[in-house]
Amino acid sequence: MPKAIVYLNQFFGQIGGEDVADHEPEIRDEKVGAAMLYDQLLDGEVSHTIICGDNFVGSNEEEAIDRILGFLEDKEFDIFFAGPAFQAGRYGNACGSIGKAVKKEYDVPVISSMNIENPGVEMFKKDIYIFPGGQSAAKMKEDVTKMVEFGNKILNDEKLLPAEEEGYYKRGIRHQYFLPDETPAYERAVDMLLKKINDEEFTSELPIPELDTVDIADPVANLSEATVALVTSGGIVPVENPDQIQSASATRWGKYYIEDVNRLKNRRSEAFKTIHAGYDPAAADTDPNRVVPVDAMRKYEREGKIGNLYKYFYSTVGTGTSQNEAARMGEEIAQELQEDGVQAVILTST
Amino acid sequence: MVKEIERTGIPVVQMANLIPVAKTVGANRIVPTISIPYPLGDPSTSEDEQWKLRYHRVGVALDALTTDIDEQTVFDVEI
Image (cartoon, rainbow over all chains, first blue to last red; front, side):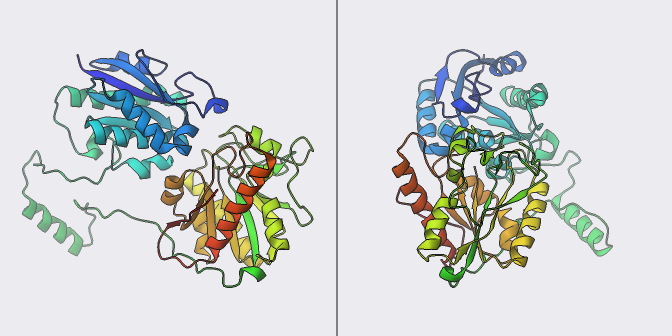
C-alpha cells in the first residue's frame, strides 16, 4: 500500500498556538490532527506526521530543512503532503520551503494547498503542486480533499491533465501534450493569428508571467538632513487602539504622534501595544521599540546621522490582509508621506 | 505597502525576518531582523544586548537608504 507523510505546523500538529511557534521539528510514527483526514481519503496510508513551528522555519530555515530531510532518510514514502496553509503566510512559507526540499531530495510528488493571498503561492508554485485553498481552517476538509484526490490520481498512475484542468496553480512547466481532438500546433497557431487580426479573444498557449515590480528609488542624497519615517505592519498602536485597526485582515491603518517621544512606552505604562493576531504579543507589548525602533532612531537623530525622525509613525496589521487592501493602505500612507516631505522610510514587518 | 511607498520615489527599506517573503512582495532594500514576534530585540537576552542589536540593525537600514542598488539587495548585518 502506498505510503504518505504529512507536514503540519505547531497549531495543526496539536502542539499549541503562537506561544509555541518556535517548536523544533519532530517526526511521529502516527497520524496527528489533520493527518487523520488525509489517511481516511488516501488510496494508501499516512505513516508519519512531521510537525514544526512556523517561526522555527522562518528564523532557521536551513536547519529546519536539514533536520526534516534527516528524519526522512530511512523512511519509505511515495507522496508528501504539506498543509493546507490557508491564508497563513508563515505556514505557507514553511510548507513551500520544506516541500520544495523534500521534492528535490527524494523526488516524490509534493502537494500543498494555500489561499491565493498567501505569499507562499508566488514563492513556491513552480516547485510543488499547490491547490487554491480557503482563508481559514473552516475549509480544512475541502482543501485536503482536493489535495488527496489529485494525490490519488498520481498514486494510481492516472493520466494527469494541465494545471487549469487539475485545478492547481500553474507552475509554468511545459509538457508535450496532444489535445484530445488532435488539432496540430500549426492549425492552432493560424487560428490564433486570425483571431488576433480580427480583434477576437484568444488564449495564448505560452502565457508570459506578469511581474509587478517597481523601479528602485534613488538613494537619499543627504541623510543627515533628511526626514525619515517609521512604518510597520506589526500592529503597534496606542493601548486604546483609537483607529480600531483589526487584529487580522486589516482594512484600516493609523498614524501616531511621536514628536516628543524618546522611546515607545509599553502596554503596562498604558502607552503602546500590539494588536496583531498573527504573532505572540508578549515581546512587543513589553517593549514596542522591538517592532517600531523609535529609541534607535532618536539616537541616530541626536548623532546627526539623520535629519529628523518624522513626527508620526504609521501602523497597520499585516496578517490575513489581502494584497488589494495592503496596496490601497500603502498608497494612502505613501501619499501622506510624500505630501509632508518625508524623504526615506524604514518599514518593519513581523 | 513597501511597493506603494517606493512607487512614489521615496526610498524604503524593509526590515523583515522572512526574507523570501519580502523579496516576493517586491521590497528592493531589505535588512534582516531576528524573529517574527521580536524583530529587533530578543527578550531572553540582556537589555544591553537588545539595544546594541537594534541600534546596529537600524543603522544598517539607514545606510541601505543611502546605497545605490540596481537589483533587490539584502544588506548584511553583523549582530
